[in-house]
Image (cartoon, rainbow, N blue to C red; front, side, top):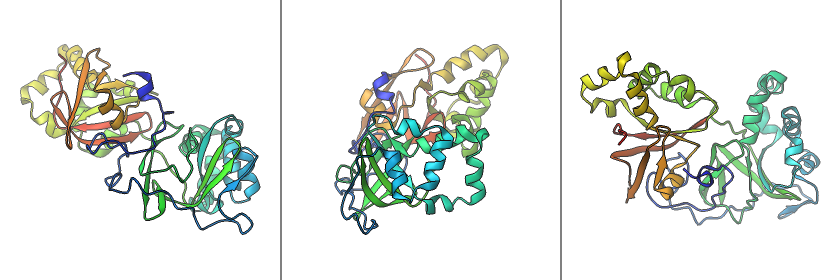
Amino acid sequence: MKTALVSAFAMVLVCGGASSLGDGCGATADGCSGEQQVTIRKAAYRPADAPGTMTSNKDIVETAVAAGKFNTLAAALKAAGLVEVLQGKGPFTVFAPTDEAFAKLGTGTVDDLLKPENKAKLIAILTYHVVPAKVLSQDARTMGAPTVNGQRLDLVVKNGTVRVDNATVIMADVVASNGVIHAIDTVLIPSDQTVVEVAVKAGSFNTLVKLLKAADWVEPLNGAGPFTVFAPTDEAFAKLDAATVEGLLKPENKAKLAEILKYHVVKGRVFADQAVKAGTAKTAQGGSIQITSKGDVVMIDGAKVIKADVEASNGVIHVIDTVIMPK
């Protein structure tokens, strides 16, 4: 897959096609429910002395500090070493949790996140609030928005308001010299589980996990990645003859098993809309899978995608109904 297609820095401003894999709206079931053309209403919550769009000649961090409502965010950015980054050229869009939003987490949770030993976790959370582009309210649509973290935010615009994952924008368009801030009422939490951990927790990939262990592929897929995994369900493996699966688990067939599993893995974090647009992707096995769509049905070789864009800390999973075999 070409680097441009897997880059987390490509901003998507409109929904894609209507297919289940290519809607470009993340994993939310109602991500593209006919609200694509509704723009975000300017939020009513604003300082009394700053009606309408707020504009500052200060950078994002300086603007947040001056607002006086983002003290915890400012402290977290400092602890994570991200102040200088967000004072850079940008542009950035920051969905900024207010002090009240951080208070919902509890004092103990916030204090733990600020500890040096939790810096990596704090960075992952904070970068999930940053989109590497300037997105004003008038530009936003219901969409999946790539973040600096690598995972996508699910933006849903409906009836003049916008939700970002499980948070609501309560003040829009605080414009800084290097981007824009939208205040939100809840801290956004990205997935902190690897693709393997997500599969184990789901409970519907027991055969896949068993085969990954037999092929010594759990540790690689628990690595930094990112990876895109086309994951066959237990029902998908049940379509194979039982003797076939048992044979793959034998030590003498370990190399063959590894080839099959690697054929289900693409390097990079490739979301649904990107995969459909590309039409093909080179796998970790070396071969290429074909990606086709017709109406609401998307096929990966001969397998149907039954759930797309399941986020993980080190990649994304697309669930398929059939085991695909290297050619």
